[in-house]
Image (cartoon, rainbow, N blue to C red):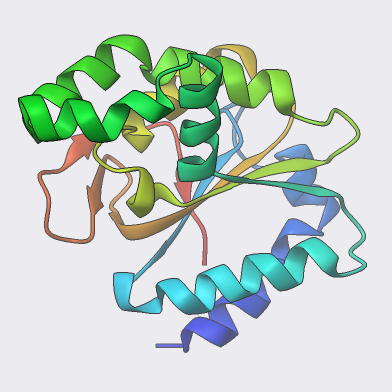
Length: 184
């Protein structure tokens, strides 16, 4: 099995290929790819995205940290400062329920689409583990695929994807998502 560094190098090569960017060979399926890795490799993946954003590539990559995007939506909804008090007073289960009522996958997808730079060639989503349990990637991808089908999406996923189910951290309950393809 190749190391995470070797796999990330291959990912960098792959995202620059014209056939990848055009979604060739996908039989008209949406161009959503999952790059799965062990959660212990998170720091290597973060370092990779930092380097990627400053490298001179043949394609332009929009990198979205899902957790940072979630915090931005909380700010926009003017609820960010209330979150610590809400958790302390009402508990984390109540907080999660309230946040899910205010900021669901559709709201997050709309935020990502609104802020996507159309001059970019692809969207790369990271921070999936940091955003859990507030944002679930399978729900986000379902919401994104409705309005974001002209550019490829690559999800850096700390877990597994077997072609039908995503399993965060290889420990949590699997969630069905069958529209993506595994990468590398």
